Length: 61
Image 1 (cartoon, one colour):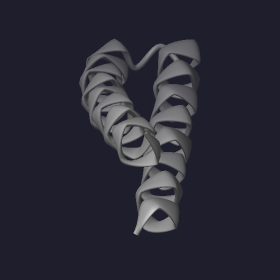
Image 2: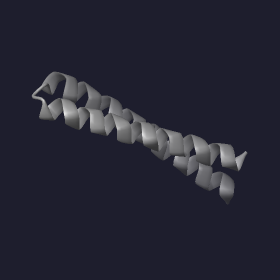
Image 3: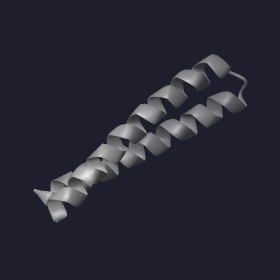
């Protein structure tokens, strides 16, 4: 059970990192509206990753 929570947290962190990279790429291309939306999504993914990490840490205790 705990391994699954850690694996899920890792997947969410990777998804967030990818979203941040995509947002930076869009911003670099001057597509600021897309970059803004991607940044919003990246933040949402980061928040979910943080919550999953907290849950995984609580399960470990």
